[in-house]
Length: 530
Image: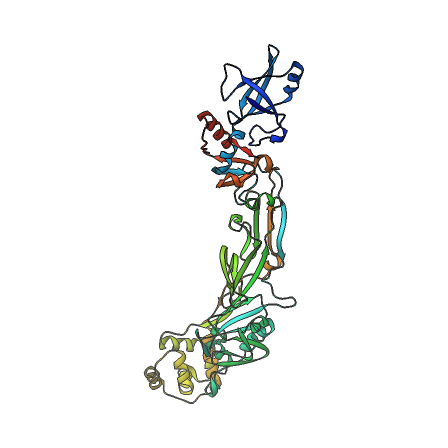
């Protein structure tokens, strides 16, 4: 029978086959005992010298057996050249192998970027740093500005939230407003001419109309540019109208008083990312965010945005309270501050961006009964008695001159006041003395309280916003020899080079069970499709 011989170099686990054009055909006979899997051939029709040249061949094909063989050894028997062969199952059943569909674990020609390749360990070394975003904290006032104070004031203008109107004032306007509020209130009208200024301030402290005062890192033009507020010189406080030389800015909507901004972060890519996107996740890549006051330092889950070129921070500040929420997300809907909406949120933070400004409020504890009021008036008016003819005369003059005002202050009804009037009589009295007595009465019960909580304005100056990555490298890989993870069922005909399969299976007509088993074992350990 005719046998083809080659001097051919190939991997043991390769499906490669030599070219017929390079083959040398020789007549051979089978030596007994022999078999198809490991035949022994004797070359015939050759002289001794001709036979010696054949020992350089290492590969053969027996057409009668439809199989390729590796020549394991040459030897001479009775001056005849004899070859020991062993079947090459990968080459012999190459067509069956390539036409099969297998679950491929690793492949040199196709792989999944998102599967972590655990074959290669991580190097023990200090990580390298790559900045994706670094800038001054955006929650700072613009340069040469001191921020803005948003105040909520109870007044007569009314709004969606009832009788509270919100204003934004620059630092100078806020200082001017506070200064003017310490002046005499005008709500008393002409009827309050006989009552001292101090009593009016104590009874109707203008700061009691303030429900909130929050410093925020903005300037008024930020609000007017977005149509949130309109410029005005008049601030309504209770019954009063305070006219400022510096402008105030009244919010047009007491419900939607919020300020939204957007920041785009570039996501640095791992220097070895060409091996697969998994290199952009832990433990190879770790991503950190510092955005005070939302977070001083936070590690973001890199697997949530693997392969993303950008991340977004959408943060909204409630201008009434200073509370804020910041969403770190993969996508943003909308085209401007009017409709920005975070989507595919990775992390969300809440924080207090505004700084509450303490408001000094004078609160007067009024007497619970007319008897308490009489004792307070007597005790506090001791200095006025010498000029008014004794306690009884003093009381007479109080009720006669300003009984209506005093009754209102002491929460006494008209019947009670009339009873007192009948008891002590009435006698004209100097209104100035009345003012001194009543002023002394209320001064003896004054208490000062602070509403609001003190915050800080300084940390943001020291805490820039930063987004960065820390990378560690894996040892070098070898795609040609080891492939990369694929983990898919694919037709092997679509692949090339190294493949490694999970639980492989082969169907080949004419193949012996031992040959099928050998093929499947080789596919499980890895072969080269060539």
